[in-house]
Amino acid sequence: MDNRIFGTALSAALAMAVAGCGATAPRTGAMADETTQQEEWTSALLRKLAPDLRARVRGDDMGAVAVQVTFRRIPDEDELADLMLNRVGGQVIGRVQVATLRTIAARADVERVEPLRDVGY
Image (cartoon, rainbow, N blue to C red; front, top):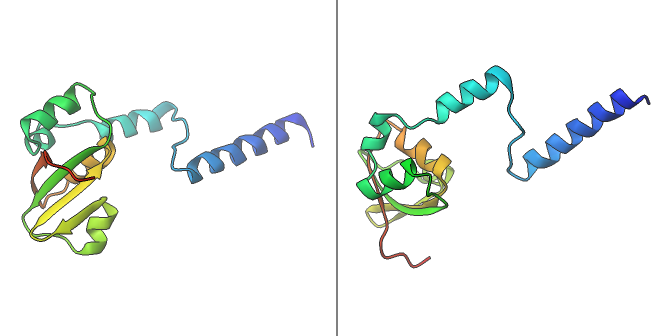
């Protein structure tokens, strides 16, 4: 096997291993530009966030954050699980990363996202 084929095979195997761990492969060119645009916070998305969450997103001061989400109509349990959220009585709560927070805010059925102040987890 020549070095080019071996290098390509090694790169592909490494990319698959990294992707399997939940990480993303490095982005290049037009694909990176398109993904960056999709990940931007628009003013409409930011308006759905409580002011302190909005400030944290703008300031890039985000790790996982505990949130309470107000939906127009609460989605089914499978959809909530996909968003890393749980239904507790009439509330929907969860501990999410910034990328998931953006996905939640981008949903048409989300009215408001607020941080949870008294968190037991």
